[in-house]
Amino acid sequence: MTRQLYYSATALLVMAAAQRPVLGQAASRPTTYQWDDSHFHLTNYIQEGTDIRDFLRLMGTHVGRVALFGIPLQQTWSYRNSGDYAPTYYLQTDAPLYYYSFTDAFIAMAYRSLSPEQRARFDPMITGFNPADMYAADHIKRVLKTFPGVFSGIGEFTIHKEFVSPKVAGEVASLTNPALDRILDLAGEAGLVVILHSDIDVPFAKPGAEPVYLTQMKALLRRHPKTTIIWAHMGLGRVVHPVQASASAPATERNSNQAAIVEGILADPGLRHVYFDISWDEVAKYILSSPEITRRTAAVISRYPDRFLFGSDVVAPKDTTQYYAVFNSYRQLWSLLSPDASEKVRKGNYERLFDAGRTKVRAYERAQGW
Image (cartoon, rainbow, N blue to C red):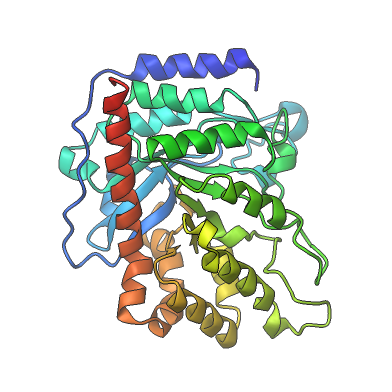
């Protein structure tokens, strides 16, 4: 994405800001809510999606609060590539993806259109930045200044993602890029909750090999101890499978080394600021692939119940069947957890992290005079 396009999108942010909103307060929630959603996309890869009021109806009395964001990437419709066929997903075309900064203004204005009571159920997130751009942190500041009282965090944004990363126009994002350090430094300073997608390994990795990106990821996390970071999907993907101990490990053991990696991070005193979400139906397939793996996952969560969050990772749902599918698929996992651990993963950890994020970001904005 060129600097001209980047600033053109940012100019639209400024034009869209019409008034200062009522500051969001922590939501008062009836006990009937079953879960909070730490990972939800209101819009898709062509920036279309569910009207926020329709989504509130889908949430109903089942879902209490939602981390609200769009998709930071726009899929190009290249006539030379697909002709009259208009792709809506990145796997439907070879045409590139590009960063779409206006997503932040769209999310902010959707949030502002709600009543204060409705706003209290959402935690909007900033996503419309290029993590390989040294100016990305400036974009985040500009969004906070333009829409004070709206955002609680940044993300989901992506560094390494199967099939997606090679399609992004321009410089490839990296865990070692100082642009990413600038972003996370700002997040720590402002109190922004971070949702970071970065695959732990390359697609179709050889069993028994050290995950390609694990060392870089842990180094990045250690460099930012004051930043609350949620590692999305536990580092897994559609074809980035849980790490196997060895090539000879049976299929029922495919999660053994992945569990050890996750637990090693959780046990590390220097990484207490790091959390994991279990969002996405692809991740649910791994966790539920056998009764033993589900029990093993539940055991790790039970030892660290304060460090996991549920999220749907659903994109622009049309109905409750689509939206509730991931949560409902985890019924066996919920049954293996104690009531306290289950409540923390489903709701409590979300509220603790995002309530703190709201408070810190509002204080940061006031300190900046915004």
